[in-house]
Amino acid sequence: MKKRTAKRVARAVGWEQLGDEELLQMRVRDLGLEIEESAVEPFIERLYDEPGSRGIGFRPSCYSADEWLCPDKTPVIGIPFYLANGRLKHIEKKMMFDVEGVGGGVSC
Image 1 (cartoon, helix red, strand yellow):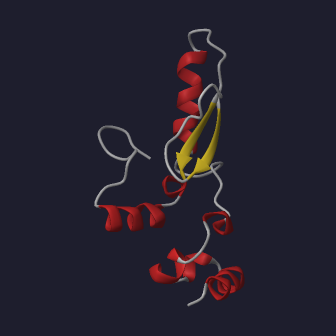
Image 2 (tube, helix red, strand yellow):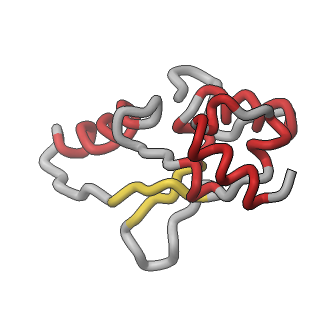
Image 3 (cartoon, helix red, strand yellow):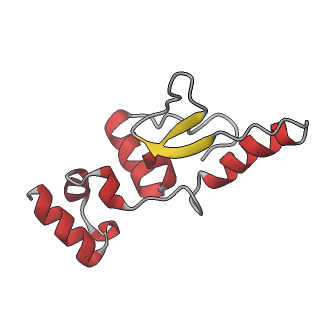
């Protein structure tokens, strides 16, 4: 399936209805993922609450990215987009045999 066709289909039926191969043809930005109200949000709140409880008011912005990253000298945190959705985590694990950021204690 061509990218444009997959994109049109995703808008019409929602990407959750696509097969894995069709989904993999989509651009990440077309998935419409949000950190808010996702599995990631409680961990970001914890990130803010722990230093906040010690009087540290530093709250770096967090955003969806292709991988974990913190740009040099910029107080932001890029969080892998697939952590915001259970199906995307499953696909990541199927393809990469691991999901970075999941496992070991409390996880997304």
